[in-house]
Length: 229
Length: 218
Image (cartoon, chains in turn yellow, red):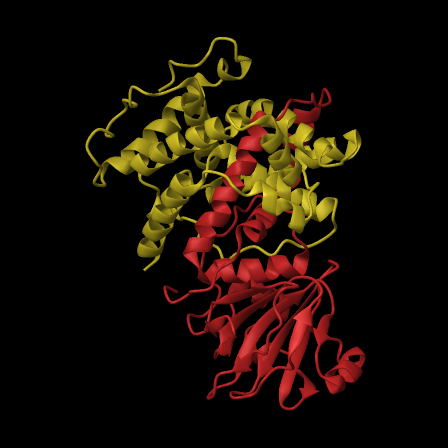
């Protein structure tokens, strides 16, 4: 799970030690549940790509923060995401000072909300995106963000490891599909997420292949509803 | 939950996921998504697109002490972890939590004002350009026939209404724009309670509602 990091990524070198515990604890929890054949244990499917293993690492970092308040794991998450969040906020219209300040707040929120992250429904990048987006609405647009009723998973609803892995693969496929879009359409989607499109303009950006990732999220929601009784 | 037949559009869910939707419309989306797992999954799929955008973002370096400053922020926060999730509304409540946040409670906390003809409204306070309100229409009563200059979202919370687009029960949301001129009628029986958001004043057909409009704030 950890061996496939690309050597060129400096973010992956430091935190291997911090990885072991949380990764194991996730798998231990999952092992008491029924799993479909081919997913059990530590082995990843052979189709694993650098990007899915990178996301493995990120999921484990969040778990380390949640379970052990692991500052080294947080530092690694920070090195990976903070420069991206800052770029995202600047593209969304913030000047550098505001973007820097908001980035630090977003990263601090990751620390306090680590227990809210559900890896069977979202990648770490997606979770980071939602927190940065909410900070943006609050700080730039000066509005409240009404959020749907919470379906946060508690200890009794620890997500199934097989679900987490399947979701990871879907995230990778979605990222690949977006990367493969014609440049014009990709620009349009970026503009939508940087807040540059009106509601009417956004209609042109909606034709994305989201069917499979939606189905995975739907399954995770059903599981959660079931657990909540 | 499974009876919901009228859902949100992709552009609404994408705008909401991207964070560009105004507050009033966002409240309708959040309220519907609270009751509709299908739209919740679609909304979260659009958030996944946002995650891919963050991944593909170039990087901008932070200041030298950014990590230390962030740890200082963390250390300054109260050390109690967020309480584990608890059900903070009763199962019998009419309003999902996002709506309760704006009302200050469930249905019994709404401060209704009469619009005449037995129709009541309560405007909810939001910061956006758009306007969002609760409407209570007695069963069997028609809303004034109206068209739209912009977008109107109407979500049913209790009772039901019907118009040319069909039957709308609890959880259903009607998305109306310039093309739709409709006369919603509350289905006979209990009051129909809706959450409605508009980004432009409604356009009434009859003379009387048009005269009354500035006073009613609709």
